[in-house]
Image (tube, rainbow over all chains, first blue to last red):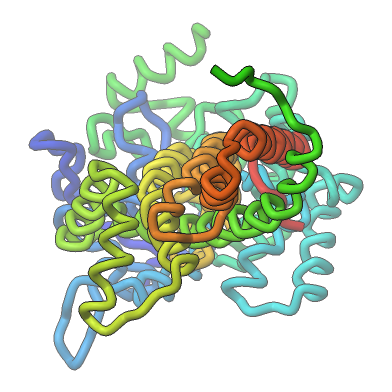
Length: 257
Length: 225
């Protein structure tokens, strides 16, 4: 069998002495689009954040392309991952945030070009050219010189996506990327993701509350509750015929609203 | 008792001398501010170090220097450093003392500024794989130092007004010259008044400069293009 792109293996995570995850397992295949749904506090975002190394793990391991994320080999010994190893691993990942987290003091173009210049060592000219292409791709070519404060939420998030893509990750982590948006701005952001899913070959791990979008875009949907995958399956199956009572009541609460 | 009167002739006569002193005062303030800026940033970073030892050392240094009078520090540097073979001019002593003293105040201002930067900024920097260096210099400092600008301006002006303390180690700044002129001519009114006015004028100019800087740079940070 092909090795998974991402593997959560026996991962545990505590908040204080309260376990959020205790022996969590999940495999994601290359180019698979997996959506995590579930009530708040179920650990969806934490999974993404542990993978992006924004949160540490307390046990188990996460593998990317078969390589452990939180451990590395140094002088033929397995040790806790150092910054060098983490940076190598992070290079495969890109994350888009709920609250955009654009750099407010940089122009839109600079927001996108900053990391390619500083991290990938691209020339300024090259990085700005590439950034302009990405802006065009997300429909914001005319906003290159604007500052984040001048943009609508939907525009900010599209810049956020472009900024992430500029680092050429193979895995995209989308953490509730439309949750902070006014309803009428949600689709302009989701359209960008739809386009990416249709034309590019990213592995994607999403957390979202937009059920229709999850249904439409995902290869697989996982329903999480209290740090466990209660139910998973193809979207049409999970949304139309949820097996677990908890999944049923969660989805029902969405239909009501 | 003699009547108090203002002698314009005498005032105009001593003004050029006092302006010479003003140069020294301004120079001490400028160099002191630059040193304080560097000391402040370094101490603020040490305060955030992952190493206990560095954090507590920085904290100890800050508390110690903030809790002792500037005048004692000035004397200490001036009279004690030669004993360990370092001979500093009055100006160098003054710059060092002002820079260290105000650096400790600025360290706390900068630390607050750094802690005020939204957590999401750090996370974005990490997700984009920026190094620690670039996270600080490209993302955090432009926002944190902009936030710290008004308070920093206050401290620079406060430092400027503390420079007469350097007259204690014979630095020929404005106040020292005013005292010398006074004792030589038995007239203090004009030189002291002029020095007061000069301090007022320079302080106001500095306050306006800070205001203009605040206007020029938007509140979200010093802009990078």
